[in-house]
Length: 432
Image (tube, rainbow, N blue to C red; front, side, top):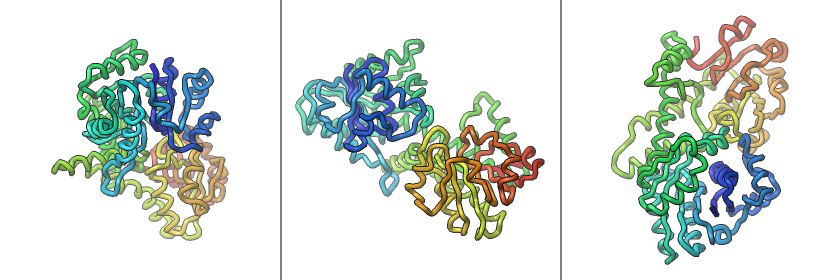
């Protein structure tokens, strides 16, 4: 099939490369000419494991190309995916201006029957708004469908190529057939395609992310309670996870969730409820708990030292999760700002996200390419992202390098008993 994908962020670039790898001809569109030129040279604007070779392979095979011209991509395309940005507006709702502008441009460029698919995470009712925007500028027949993505940053390629489910939201049978045909190679061994109306598909995405965020905030609340009653959240988490009705996933306490999805989608879901005159009270609590949790580790650091003036704090991990350079809404930003306000000197290291954070803090903090260089002379080490290379560091080497042996484990990846026996002062989240 011939496809067009509007937007080359995490969703659009992964989708475009993934579809082309199954033999489709895909044109990805972005209005940023410099970004398109970089992509044509094989330079990816994002870090995502496995994506670069996937893009390179399909560009070289002639199945994947990039352009700034929407009309060039849309004419003749059987399916057009909308994967443009939907940032949060001031009230938390999703800003659909890019989606609707792209829809209008698609309508003007269409030259035959086309399926227009919203791939971005959008509020309930967006498919209808897209349909209206296109219908105003074209007489050609078309259908609109919702096909939300369920990709995890850091494992997006694998999630796309081996999806656990594919949601197709449309009442148009011809559109359903076209999308089922497109996704058929992805589900040869197990039909994981679920069709429904567009509004249900749109809400499925929000509800899924909101529920996962709820599990995280719940465990963070439990972790804070553990510290007050003298329990160990690691034992509590394991005990809960062994219950098959609950399961172990997303029960890891820490310093709060971040990234481009959970914070934005939780706020957008709450805004959608407000627009209907109702409320999602559990989600409102989830959001409050998460915002508060981002400051918990900074509070521990400040309380330990009483004063951070003249102290150096080393930070391992800046991205909101391992496997990505995405620092949007990352707890690290909140924690570093708090440390700076308290008078600390901050030295940081992340395997891929130093550059992303430098755009936020500039020269206010120091950046290092090696995790051990970061801790040299530091009075404390704060672990904020659980990259695998941080899981089993040489603790004896840390003792030699640090000015004071104090660890603040924001992800509970180190064994408190082990590091305390080595001579460290250890602080975790809800650990004894």
